[in-house]
Image (cartoon, one colour):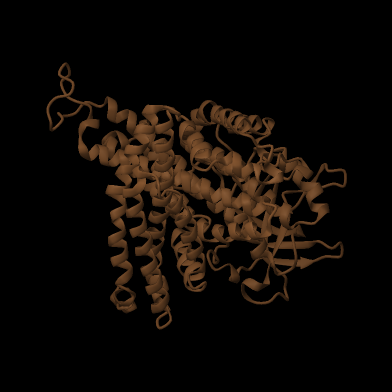
Length: 597
């Protein structure tokens, strides 16, 4: 298997040339000290961790997997040492609140680091992102006592965090959970229930594990409105901060999975475990969504990271593997055959991987910038606008990046042929590891339904109109850029196509609510393709400017531009079939009776 290499050239180009990160950070007092040089230094160190520490234990971790013995989970060889080095380097608290020992860095920075870590070793990265999400939720919703007790040691990496939502009978429909929270005389709660699919629910990497658990009081309102959020530590914490007694939090088993085998996916049993309320009673689901938006962004980043890893392997294989001759005549006359890179279909696969991976990376950064602006910007109206954009972008980024990421892993496997199917090259592991990103943190079908229903139909297209403003502002900024005109014309046609389709679904849904679900997945794909096109417009414009000024690596810029042209000519036309699918409506989907399936 080829060693993973962090895509720093892409990341620096996106941060500096496309999104002008310096200007964004300088406009917000809490990030104004995050300079280009500081970002570069942090990313360089993160790249070393990904390449030198995480990538070497990726395949071995997959082969060994986690061990379960009577409630005790042991991670594969090398994971504990890697986690200690990760914690000692201060990475656990990178984006954490500075009042509790965090470093206060923007999400944009951690997003690119997450992508690197996912590309190098997805199982390891999962242990880290759950803690990041848990600390963010506590920062926003916990009282000062809980923050002071738990955040410093979570930011230091001594303790880790989880998110406990799903139950054996309740996944997407969390309103029917059975876990109970009974108040006690000390002002805390006894938490009882079983949670499944809990990533990092039990392991040997940290001395304590802090669970965020959804449960209901006995007299809580029915449905989602009766859910509260509780902090339930594996071990109780003494007043001086020392580890105390066990808290009746037990791992019943770990799952035997298709992929991410070095990540412990646990069944967790809570038996009158002491829990502490986070936020207000019956507001647990809304409070936990603080974490969910960040975790969903991470799932898209997992797709991007594994797509990048697969592209690197496939690219090198295509340059070295000799099979057949180029249709235009032999290229390596001193060899028995030409590299398979000469064949158009091999190039189709590689370019599709490359075009979608860098667009996914750009969309993830764009989404992360909006998260940072909504958190840090001093102007309320700017924060509100960014928050609205986040609500539209996150379901698309999560679903479309993870879908295209999985597709890229499969394309890489296909390109290698039989070598892609065996373990040696790593592509089959990437396929297995990437598959889960389409399922967890809200399956992609749910993300599509959220986008089509809540974010589009119910808002009467308000959020889409906001995104159109963003896109039109960019188009206007390029009106004098002659090299961009043909690209912009296609982009404008695509925007109009989406506008007409959006209006049609909103109108049809008034008479038939099934039209929302019938359109949802194709609409999500159409929105994702449009956003990828938006990202490519921005990348092409920046690349043309850099090339004209003689800035940057000329070969890199030329390759980027040619890849962008491929995207515009070969991938954007897929919008036509998506529109046709949406326009077909709900009738054929809903026509069969249950017995006819």
